[in-house]
Image (tube, rainbow, N blue to C red; front, top):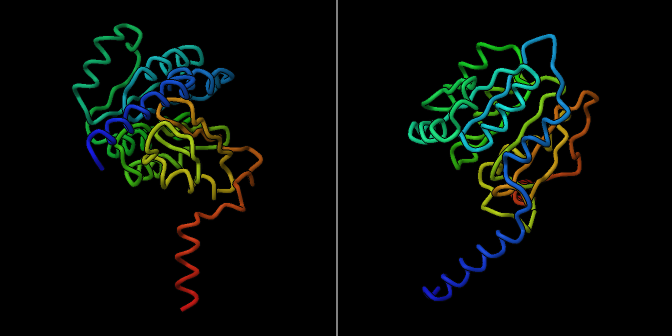
Length: 220
């Protein structure tokens, strides 16, 4: 691939993203939490990978009386966000260091987590590990948002969607998560709600790559 062609391709991608993107992550967080009400028990919001969405989480937390944990391995990013946002993040609990270790501490401290935003390392396995640490604390009514994610076989996306490569199929195969794509938000995102009724997974879904691989094994 020539340098000129690669430059043109990258330019076309930038134009597409600027035209296709309809909202940012913070706006989607506000939408997903708009109908959440205060509860008689402690309400907990968790985020991995600090961003402008941390401010949106703090605003929603103030309305419903929730505790907010923002986890990030990048101490400089945390310091920059706190300097920019000032007092609006005064009640946010920042946990610096490995996000998996931070989530383990949160899971040990709280019986339930009501909202989790996964937006840390650009790694499918890391994101899945983060989710698995919180999964026992995600009860009916809990909500998730996975950044850099899409539904399988999605064509129009704003990024590589690598963070959700493992977690999104896991949620689709689960009997309790109701999954929705937001391809025009951020770098494309996927949200999910722990359905009180259950049995809301897409039972027809099977990743074509895995299905083909298993067929080849069984045919031998």
